[in-house]
Length: 475
Image (cartoon, rainbow, N blue to C red; front, side):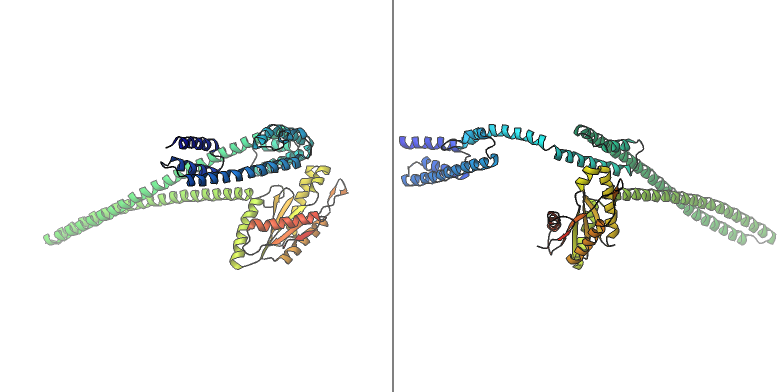
């Protein structure tokens, strides 16, 4: 290898190490260049080809880098809109490089932090609304727990604190207390269930003992029958022998009477033993039936409690309508039925107009009352086979099985009109209540998410076009 080739190899190696990891294609081209230089005989043409390939990739990267820098500068100028001219100072060069972008990161981070603090102070209304919504979520959770009992009064005390719209710090404390309470409830339920399992095992063990004892008694009865039959047979054989041996009538009579007495005595003993064992079997049967009935009742009680908790888990405690979980379960069943029988199915999303204004003007207790009233009225107007649920906040969702779009619109319009005509007063003053809705029919092979999203888009159009209306989404 010549001195020139050695220098070229060292230079290519240094260049490869400096640029390694910068770009995958560049790494491959540089490695190819090094392979050519490692050969014993230097191939000038091949070296020129690989060197040209390296230069070509590098030129492309340089052009891309310049364009990206220009794009970044343009983007940040647009985003900042002249609000922070000093922040862009590192980029104000004739030909800024990627390193200038790194220098730009520090002042940009400081600027963003300052803007975030300013934004937090100016957007306190949104934070207050978020705090209120979180408080209501906690309240709904606690109300659900209260349906399963509040022996120590802790849940009532927590709900009272939430009614006063607590601060962020208080809300954090309430959240911690709620979590502790949930963990306590779970621990208590775990102990109760473990106790139930222990009692169940004891009852099963008792039943097993009874069955084992009955098996022993049946075995004894079987042995008693065998022994009795054997004894009778022996007595009969003995009697026949005596008849054959005796020729005098008086002696034969005496022998036969004695044999009959022995047979009678043996029969009485058998009947007594058999009756005792039957009585033991009957007692065991009564005890087993008692244990089985107790076991069945325990299972019924457990299933009843599980069904009760399952229903509570799918119920919105404020409106007494199904919650989103309950809706999703019903939706799955109705979709399966619609696909099986090729039936149409539609969905409507309903929102109470200006509900935040009601909360702000009259208070959240009145807001809760409005939610309960509207939920009850909508449920009363819905058709029997329709399914309405609270979807979250002031939003409701209505599932309309076997319903095409036109009929679904009529059903939603009927609900809207009914709510608009429902009188609601606060301190003897009428409070107007209206709802907006969007409705969509499921298309063939359409995903559930896309279908409900179309109904949500239709609701947006209803609110955008003046509220208090139903919009059909069929685009």
